[in-house]
Image 1 (cartoon, rainbow, N blue to C red):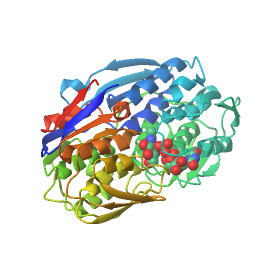
Image 2 (image 1 turned 180 degrees about the vertical axis):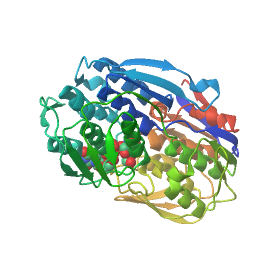
Image 3 (image 1 turned 45 degrees about the vertical axis):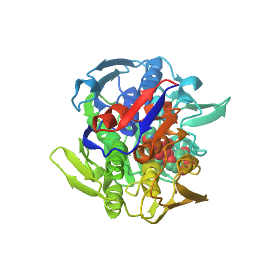
Image 4 (image 1 turned 120 degrees about the vertical axis):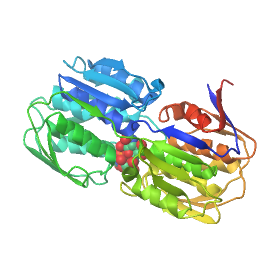
Length: 427
Ligand code: UD1
């Protein structure tokens, strides 16, 4: 299994292209199940999770065409056309779903289009128990019958789904997306309250509207969906990845460098950019995106993760890497997922001073981290180790990098192009 080897200490300078958001691309791909016409998605990132879902969709009968490539030097990314002329299969098998929790996103559209869906219970990142009860309760509210048997969810709505009112107990991103897709083709009106407001949910809703769905309240926590009999194809450009943006912004700042993030959109990251600015980072908008500069040692600040528009849980580990070398002490509180501090023992191996009590980590900034062999545990945890490696004295070797490949396209190339000493090696 590949490793990433980093020799720390270089200030990063240059530009990095921000690709389309993985977390928007996945539900958008699942939306292709809702129509017999072609859905063409552009600016898709080239990532393991995208291939996993493409594989799963192909097994359900979706014809997938690919053109364009992120290697062409542009920011256009990959273009994928998806055509589900007929649904030939309604089972999403264990060996694909276990690799990625987002496979659950086929449940809503399969039910809406084919009246039945059998989806294995999910796997994905090992960050807490991450149940799917809200997805299931919402679909039941729309008239589906649900049974759990032998590790599979069996859902059926042979006479179609019917609109209804559903309040999400917590604003789950995946459940909101699943229910939006299901409700767009249900009979009558659905009102989802306490819905997730993440920009990726809005991106999906906008695409569904372009496919003929009728959705009001996009971007708010109350979504009103008037079901329509059928949806049609469209072309849609995936919005830029705010988590990738935030991650490279932190890389620039931590190394005392300056990076232009081409294609980044500041309005998708108001809360993290505010937090970054408080630490002393310089952030400016440019004609092409954002420019971020680090100037001296960062100041420690307290951070608490929250659903959007709050500070994203997907940037918590990376922020902790910055706080590990900042001036002062920082309290980082994780409120979305339990067990999302798996990067802590690895950062401590590199000399960080961090203690965890419940959902809060107390990070006392140290002057220097020291390179060490460390292990990636989940997607965002692994990239925090890369950030730490970029500023550590000596060599850091991150193993189990398949986690990184799920969410960061060409990470080592992008960082190396800005002057980082980083390479992928076979052990
Ligand atoms: C999505 C993102 C993930 C991000 C997360 C929170 C994708 C593909 N992934 O994951 O990167 O970290 O949002 O921003 O978009 N919950 C339940 N029952 C459910 C569903 C969720 O209790 O049925 C809980 C979860 O355990 C968690 C919270 O709700 O505590 C939020 O999870 P959710 O928003 O659903 O995360 P995902 O959609 O899986």
